[in-house]
Length: 486
Image: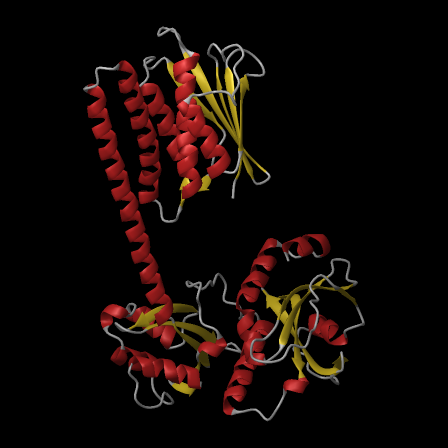
């Protein structure tokens, strides 16, 4: 809608914000009306109207087979839209329109903000779905009429209102109509069922909804008294959550004042007991997974400590170095599990893993603090499976660069880790400024255990490619990785 407003209308940002608030709630109006809603915006040149939004009802058949958003209607083609915009009143007169052999009754509602008409909502009812209305349907239609009057007078939507819950109730979940003092005038069968789950034994009609809820819901499971009275009494345009130890409800209130005076409210209720139970199960499962990662990390650190102790007792220098390499490999995996033990999902911010890896490799090398690892770019979030394999690969490449690129213990150097995310792939290069590869080096013929590990992980685990060669400009060695992100 924002792009259409900028391209074809003179509406300002406050007008757009008002229309977005209206669209946030107009599913309720469509369901109460059993009708499609289309939002028409006036063209800046006064030549007609642009369709900027459309909502179909979930309670009845649609009046539109195709979407109309983005279409233009010139002045004179839809007289009801012209009349609502120019006269600032609801327009209902006129014979039904026929669309695809379906009779459609059209009503138009001016959208008023700060005394100005900024748009028109067309309400389109498929008359093939109309039958003798029940009491439920009559209550729906009366409430829809009150809300459309509020739109025309500038009282709806409520300025700044936003639902606090992503799972806010809809009309079909449970519908109640209360009068100006908060007594229930009508309750749908679904709403009655919801309250019976709370412990109600009789009917809702004639009861004060706030007082009844106080009797059924313990104080620790309901909001403060002011919020409870405001929402369940129909005085505040907002929602809240209430319940017992076994039942959870979301209750939403929309005060009704079609002519300016408060006449009552529309109350929507939804039983979210199963949703809350699943939320608790997910929280428990997530905590269990994090605890598992924490224990795996601890166990890996214990293994690393045992290998380190064994290395100190080795008389053979080659055996000692092999055990120290194993310690670094185990440590790189432990870092991934440490991050997973602190994260909510099974994805990790890999930047927080690779930076400690660089410090770990250089700190334990013979070069001490003379070799520095610098990262250029960001890895972002990676799945845990990819993070574990990539952490081991980078550990080996950094270790190779430190060990084989700098022979002189007095030589300072820099290893640059460059990362780019391009079109669904991760491109990583590890460049050192050391002495470079030995003459005649062939990656395929190499017998190095570290490089064998790297190739296996890159090609088999990550599904990527590895290249090893000289730095294009200057001295040193470049290891290049190209792996898919998913």
